Length: 201
Ligand code: OGA
Ligand code: NI
Image 1: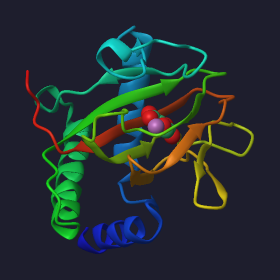
Image 2: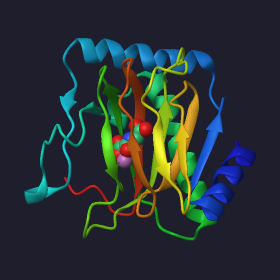
Image 3: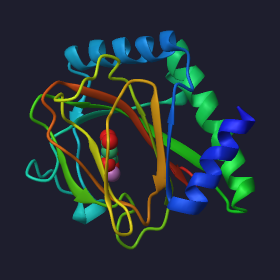
């Protein structure tokens, strides 16, 4: 994986974001997707919120996905494999950029048909703890017209990234403005953030 890690790090350096395809065994992507959809159907997901503490809101006009936070100690085999990958990448990026990255938080996200997330950055105002956002898409049969593209507002251009299965997107949480366009089909991903701070509870 070192070559892939190096290429992600160089992309982050040049463009503040990186897109990589096919890094994982397709069976792993299928397993993650299947587990996420099963848990979604069992009602284990919650409406996502925005902000932190008193600013925390649950505004369906801004985002309408549903999430389930993952606990690395209660991971399924497939989730454990992804946690291992994410930890190695975190250590690599932390050495490459000479910054401290303490941990990663991960959640499964399902965007039911018609869901979206309006333009935002991932670092909460006044909190510098989220350094890199990392998203693994699980939509193995995604085709044009299914919607749910990740729209990235790059310096001067707008880039729409298709949320195809086995595609990994990493970007600077403090810099990159982005949104999720309305999805026509249910859209599944594992979304996470590499953070500077320790977990305090
Ligand atoms: C987020 C987000 C993008 C995506 O959860 O903050 O912007 O493509 N997700 O799922
Ligand atoms: Ni975001």
